[in-house]
Every structure is written in C-alpha cells, then in structure tokens.
Length: 344
Ligand code: GLA
Image (cartoon, rainbow, N blue to C red; front, side, top):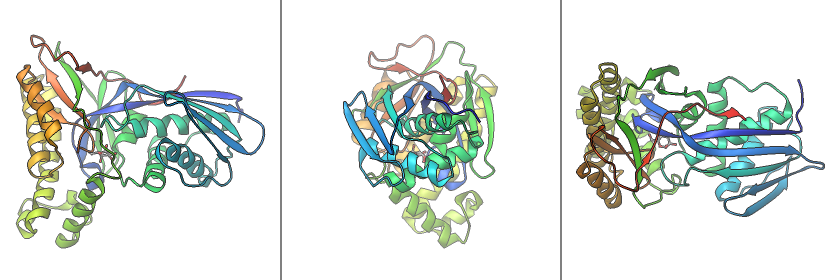
C-alpha cells in the first residue's frame, strides 16, 4: 500500500443510447461514457478537515473529515463521498479537493455520477488502498446520491462512468449486472446532443415518484421487479401503473433490438428504436416537457434518423443520431464513446 500525496482522477459523463428508467427495474440499457466529465485533484493536507473548491463555481466548502454534516448542491456529493468511503473502511486523510468539470449540471448527461466517480477514485488513490471492484464502487457512488443528495437513482450512470470502454457502448443487464462492450459501427453517422434549455433536478423532479410507481406496480403483481412481469400482467394493473410498466417492458425489448440493429449496421433501425423510446417516455412515462419536445422536433427536422431525451427526463439534453449526409443544428455537440473513470 503506497500512500500518495496527490491524486488526480477523471469521471466521465454519459449518454444513454437507449434503456431509460430500466436500471431501477432490473432491466437493460445501452450506454457510453463521453469525453466531457469532472476532474478531481486530491492533495493531502495537515489537520482533520476536508477543504473543497469547486473551481468553475468559485465556491468553497470545509468540513470535519470524521463527521461531515449535510449540505446542498455540489457540497452534498463531496461530503457524501467522504462519509461513504469512510463507512466502507477507507482510511481517508485530511485533503484539499479541487473540482472542475465540463458536463453541465442538470443536463441529463450525468454530471452527478461524473463527480461521484472522480471524487471516489481520487480519494481512494490518496489512501494508497485498492479500489473495490467496479460494481461495488458503482454501488458506493450511487449511495452518495441516494443518501446524501436524496435522488433515489439506480446504477446506470455509475456503471457507465466506471465500466465503459473507449470506442464502445456498454450493454448493462441490471438483473445479473452482466456488462458487455458493444462495438458502435457508425460508418460516418454521429450521435449528437442538444440542450433542451430546461435544467432538471432529479431529487426534485418526478424521478422518485416514477420509481415509486414502478414499485407499486410490482406490489400489485406480486413480482420482485418489473423484469419479472409479463405483457399479460399489464392488464392487471390500474391505468397509470400499467402505462409505467408498459414503458419498462417495451424499453427492455428496444434495447435488444438496438443492439441487433447495430450488429447489422442498420442505423435506420437504431433511429426507429430511439424515436419509439422517446414516444414511450412521453406517452407512457410522462417524463417529457414542452422544451424537450421542441428540441426533439428540431433535431428531426434537421434530418436526424432518431431522437430521444436522455437521462432522468423532465428537461435536460436530447440525443439524436445523424446520418453522414445531414447537418446537425449549430448548437448540437458531438458525443463519442470514451473510457470509464480513471486516474490521470
Ligand atoms: C438518471 C438516473 C439513472 C437512470 C436514468 C433514467 O440518469 O441517475 O439511474 O434511472 O435517470 O434511465
């Protein structure tokens, strides 16, 4: 065990190609880490405090290493990461943390997991201890968000942020936690994102409510997760819960259809899956907004073969697949699959 004076770690944002609101339903998703993310530099200091500096926001935080108290915003992530790592028996020293990032907050591109991953990797590195395996570390990062931020999110963003492979998408089965890299033969087509202009906050938006509705659907059906529900079961549910469960069941199928279409190099079929996913999120999951709908429409008019909201919904970014001969709007940003979180 070699303790370090200083460690620098990068946690990426992610784009979810398809498989939305499936992670907490033991379903499937196809995702990739992007080049934009959060970088955390951890430097040992004397004393018993953690000093954190969010450089882009020009804000600071200082708290007791042994007993972080609750806070809001980015501070909740930092305090939560320190507390959860300590609870997992990492011997964290007093540190100064410098945080800087390129994923816009509340964008649906997983700025939260990018921050959690970068914080945990940097903090573990200064201890000199071995990080736990990726799934265990993803769970730890997720508990920062669940316990300290109050967003009852699943494991999608953390697994994407830790386990993605450069140039590949990652197929995740949340029932078995089987992770499979999937090549992305885009042949000149490109994935882009545009900002709907509406920021979302997962804890405050309908996210926790949707999760609760899915749990209620499981209770009614007497199944542990919606992965165990069948199409016939949908008729046994009250209307609202039936629509939520219908989205989840169809979305799992669409993930598999997208993987097949990619394998066949059939990007038109990938586009159809993206469109169908978006329609379902809008009609069955009620997680779209007028700003998101406008962004989707704009992308389709510009020639996208498919477009859909990404992440928790209720605002944030829209993902679109553009064929080689169409020109994305000027505000669109190219997103390409990069590696998972790592030390720099
Ligand atoms: C957010 C959450 C994820 C996942 C998506 C929806 O990004 O953090 O766990 O539930 O929403 O697919």
